[in-house]
Length: 450
Image (cartoon, rainbow, N blue to C red; front, top):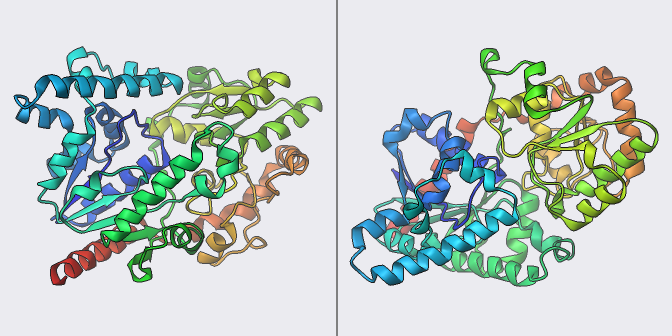
């Protein structure tokens, strides 16, 4: 079976983005469990270095079964057709991409991946040429899980879309603060998904909450019999001790001193980082000094940046950027606790929480996120039997108190939480791969008989 994956972003991606991590785990599990599968990834050259970093655990092993389908290939093939027009279009795309990258303070990605060939850099990025490739693809099935991508429309084979969430719609008022045209963006996403539904695409979500409150609520032309639920386990890999920095080495590498809380995620409105910052300020006022070490950018949202500046918290925020799997592992291993204030996650239970719990040595404090009740019940737990020191989404005083309490005596909190990860890891990525293959086969069969 040849599976096409639509990852036709026209901007820099990060291998630590949740969607990128999900794709990496899914592709690896498919390749490991099904020897007859090959993968075509439709993307732009500018994204390949980061995608390969995300695939580092399996790319070399399976690279003969993984192909990157890119605009540069198309240009080399059809360069005589409107070459000047094509070049100017690509240049415009890359100026846009570069501006977006600089605005997100991600210039380090260019340096890290040594994108030095100026000619190639300028001609990357034409989404249109990917449409041409998609139209003549020999894939048996095409998969996508990013709501604004459209290359999948051009495939002739059956389509499967994995919807992680539509929280920018449910939390539109929050996003409007930094994105005035959020309603237009949301409508474009809805229109795109409705077009996929009209094309008889199959849809996957990780749970009933996202299916009912996002997918079926906003994509009104979808057929219920084309929706499926595929829960997935944690997305963190075990790192061998010899590949892990010592605590002293890790702290020196990232200039981390004293007690710290890891925040291995981006700062978006649904992440509710402001709650953590308010609790941090309360603790600092009491003389309790804690750092937040984040792979994201706490200053990218104005309300967070303003709060940090107004309350002199800049020295408490350590931004280390997108990091390797082994450094991510160390980030959690040497932390004092994990605090997750998120309003909503596609899984219900946040990936950060499951990453931290997988160590069984780190206490966790978690907000009562939307969809959490269903997520817990899906693995036989509840708010009472899975005590993650729950706090309300706007209660920074209780959060500060709980952080102080956990710091003073972490072991009881570690012990009462050890069973939670066991419940969430009964299901494996091999199970996820099996479920996807079942849906792929059903879609192919239904398409054949249509």
